Each structure stands twice: as structure tokens, then as C-alpha cells.
Amino acid sequence: MTPVILLFACDDLEQWEYVGELLRGDDPVAAEHAPAELWECPQLVQVGERWVLILSLWYRPEVVARSTVQVNYLVGDLVAGPGGSPHFEPDGGGRVDQGPDFYAPQAVVDAEQDRVLMWGWSWEGLARTQDETDEQGWSGCLTFPRELGLEGDRLVARFPAELRTLRGEPLDIARGQGVEAQVDLPAPFRAEVVIQGPAIVEQIHVDGRVESLAAHDEGDATVMIDGGILELLPAASTSSTVRLYPAEGDVIRVRGAVVDGWLLGG
Image 1 (cartoon, helix red, strand yellow):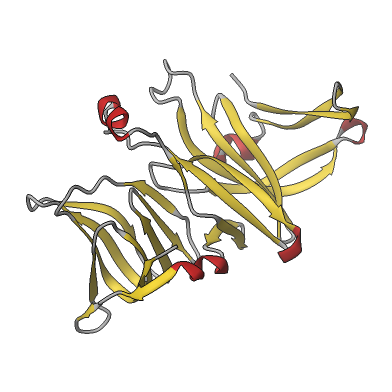
Image 2: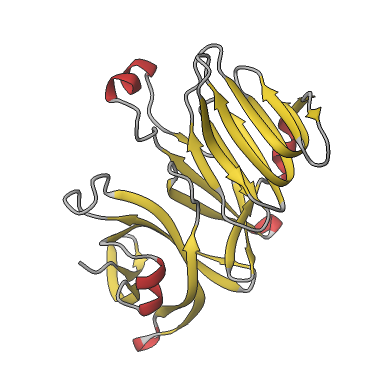
């Protein structure tokens, strides 16, 4: 199976005309950076001077058990195709989010502030049982909004400045030697943490087990934790989204190059 994005035009919402193909999955760059049997939720947006095509990758269940795999992007240009219809020519790409719990994002253009904002869907963790989901009474959630940018041909994201209005009481950060620092987040685990170098986010279970949730290698990054979702957005590399399920008595710990942090209000 080969994914393809078809283009239709209309002057009347009840009368559509097929005009051509925006992109096919057998394009060499698309096949390398966004392999799938079907592209869900395609989003074509202009980021700076380039065009970015965001694609959610899907396979048949007999090929990939979960079917919905991950979200990738292609960077390229819009050119005139056959008959003058738009055609997308990609020359690079990668993953939109490298965490396990991010799919089907929606991007919108904020023309007033000349930016592209994106929200992703974060499903329940793969280890979550249907009984546990039924007991909690809801399934999945949206991420915080992300403002998209390009570092060369790499798609990056940052949290919009408006989210700073959620900042409440400063976090108590235990500082060690050099860049070593640590902050333990209190329940209900709603916080923003700023890091400037290597760091790791862990869940310390009440029984003493330590579970690694996310890690950052170098450079600036921001971690947002809102109850059952963790979002790590590095300034110059790929974001990570992880669902978490802290029990009573658990601790969420960020350790490493922690420089600042706040509880989230609002």
C-alpha cells in the first residue's frame, strides 16, 4: 500500500473537483522519512520560509499491532504540478515527537502573531489496561500548545509565552556541585521546570522502584508536567511526550541541569 495525499477544489462546498496529488508515499524522501501504509491527519503549514508537512503514520493491524505508530514531518517546497495544481517536493524530514504517546496533531496558523501553533493527542499509555481506563472515566488528552520553528531543516517546538501566566509558586530546587540539581514535584504534579543541559525525569514509586520517564542530552529545554502527561521540549531538538500514572505517595523527580521551576496554577 502506498499513501497519497489527494487535492480537491471547490467553489461550492457540495461540489468538489479532483485536481491532483500533493504527494505520494513512493517519493524517495517521503519513503525515507515518513514510511506508512496510510498518512492520517496531514497538516501542511509554512514555518518560516519553508513548508512543513506533518503526517501521522498508520499501518494495518496485521502489519503493526497498534496501527497508529508515530508522527513524522517532511520539509520542502510547494511547486506547480501537472495542470498547475500544488505539488509538495520534500528534501528532508524526521519525527515530530519521539515520545511514545503523541499522535494526530492539529496545526493552526496564528496570523496575528505570525506563528504556527500545534496541539497533539496523547493517548493512554500502551501498558494501560481497558479496565484501568474505564475506571478513571476518560481516555486520552491534549498536549499543551506548541509553537513550531525550524533549526535548519529540523522541526522544533517551544511552549508559547502565554503559558507563563500559569506559573505559580517557585519550586524548591536542591542544588549540588556544578550543574547537578534536583527538584521533587509534589502531587498533583503540575509544574514547569527549565533545564540547561543534561537532565532526566523519573517517577519514584512509593515501593522504591525508579522509572525513567524522559531524558535530555544537552542545551536548553522546558519540561511541563500536568497530572498524567509529561512534555519535554528541547530548544534545538525533538520533543518528547509521555503519559504517566503516579499513585499516592509517588514522586516525580527532575535531576541534572535544573535552573528554575514553578508550580502551575490556572
